[in-house]
Image (cartoon, rainbow, N blue to C red; front, side):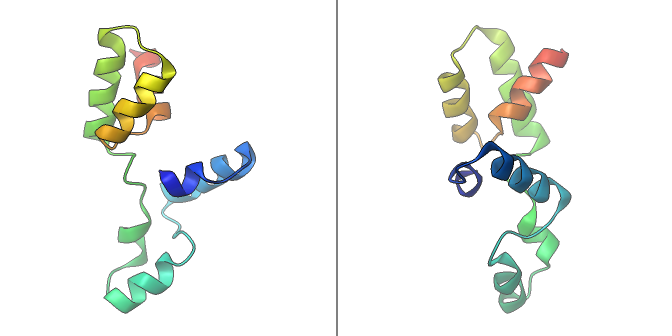
Length: 92
C-alpha cells in the first residue's frame, strides 16, 4: 500500500497497517465515503490483504527462492501484501 509505505517510521507503518486491517478509514476517506454515499468500512479495508492474492503470492514464494525485492515487486503486481504472503509461506 503506497500510502502506508510513505510513512517514515516503522511504528507509524505498523499502526497504519493495523488500522486498515481493523477497518479504520485513512485520512480523508471518511469524507470521500460520505460524499460518494459509500460506507466507511467498504473504503477502509486494505486492498493488499486479499486472501486469494496472498495465497497466490505464498505459492510463488514457496515455488522458488526469491530476493525480498522480487517478492515485493510480485506482491505489487498481484495486489498482495508481501509481508503477509511471506508469513503464509513460513506457516506452510
